[in-house]
Amino acid sequence: MEQIKDTQPTRSTKRNQERFGKTISLIATLLIVLVVLSILFFVLSRGLRTFTQHDVSVLDFFAGTEWRPGETDDAGNALVGALPMIVGSFVVTLLSALLATPVSIGAAVFMTEVSPKAGKKILQPAIELLVGIPSVVYGFIGLTVVVPFVRQLVGGTGFGMLAGTLVLFVMILPTTTSMAVDALNAVPRHYREASFAMGGTRWQTIYRVVLRAAMPGLLTAIVFGMARAFGEALAVQMVIGNAPVLPDSFTTPASTLTSILTMNMGNTVFGTLENDVLWSLASILLVMSLVFNIVTRWIGKKGAIKG
Amino acid sequence: MNQTKMTIRDLNLWYGDFQALHGMDLEIPENEVTAFIGPSGCGKSTFIKTLNRMNDLVQGCRIEGNVQLDGENIYSHRYDVNNLRKRVGMVFQQPNPFPKSIYDNIAYGPRTHGIRDKQQLDQIVEESLKKAAIWDEVKDHLDRNALSISGGQQQRICIARALAIQPEVLLMDEPTSALDPISTAKIEELVTQLKEDYTIVMVTHNMQQASRVSDKTAFFLNGYIVEHGDTRKIFTNPEHEQTENYISGRFG
Image (cartoon, rainbow over all chains, first blue to last red; front, side, top):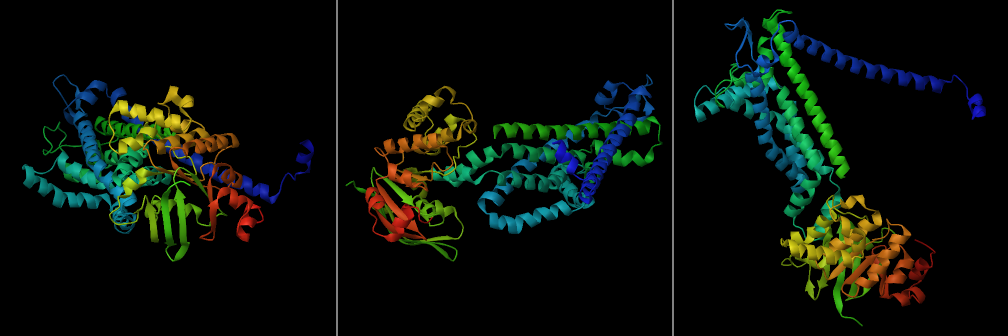
């Protein structure tokens, strides 16, 4: 070994190139880690000031239903209850995922199992188009089509969680569908062949073999869709009504964490409670996106063991 | 001489413009093992798949001619392909159990064909695993994932799975090519037992295997059946020079 080491030139062009490439990718990686960590630090440190500097109790923040930053109740406690927004965010996220799941799995089955040709020609471009539409356009369409539609259907103003759910449903559809397609395509051909060779019909094969085998991937697709719905701000803000009150129906104005953030972030002074409490909302969003991330990883791991 | 189970008459097959099979004629006798030998790409696997219409799944595949099972043309429009595949089972080159428990793998076929009764399923699973000579190895952990056992065991699970739908014909497309010699020996032994109850058709690259386990052999070359007949005759006294060259290892 020693001898071989000795005969190696210590500095050659190749070695320098190798070192150069390594350094560059290392710097890039460090930069990304640094950015992520500083965002985390900044958002959380600001968000926690609500509790440390302004003495808002954690319970009042998470369970309080009165959202009037800058005002206090009779006892002098700040009115920064975030429950309406937390509920709003979770409800529209879960409902839109609930709507998107059957539709996207159905579309994915069509594209991979039923008619790959038509799927590639028609559905694939349609989905790619949906991905490319900016969220403000979704919001605009929601405002001019969905909100009046809901108004006519149920009455009231039309703004609310139902309109938000419908808009988000369309917005997360391309994400969940294309990921579901990938999950189904990843199911090995020989599973299908085995089922057909035993006289299984196409439906039996899809339902009992392909969908079961693709389950971890399909779950991942849905969780990704939920992450997207949870974080979407602009389009939701345009149709949900932005009333920071606990909604008593799906068609009364409500709000989400993101919509309150986008509405108010320009109107507060840095360092005040009004501003810091917005950072607290942002912290919740950040933590939730972390949770979605962990869930998808966990699903991936469980799926891998099952083979 | 056993009765003829399947009869193939003037079968031609195209993948798009490419003709893969030319004017195939063959009889497959009941309760015997028929082996297909020949170099890679000669059409053996394509041909065996025409016997249970697995080629239906291949895009651009076109078939002319006649394949009869018990005298009925399986390519007739009225023939139910799912029922055909229930009668003509298949084992693939790569062991391909589902990512489910051993039990669910074996029960897949019967369930597919409408058997729901737990007791009946238990019985079918046990019988099929016994027939595939793997019952003793797996009986204590039928709930284990079928992918967690060895390749040779997986292949016998696949054989058991195919037997569970009580087929009459069992097609085996190079069933041992992915297995080690010991597993191969077990499967060969199994094949000789199974022919008591089933008609077996087997593609193999291994000529010793063909001579060991088969009663009839068909030699394929470039999409033609060059010669077919009793295995002993093919291997000791072939009529065609190409056959002799192939089995003596001069090409292929």
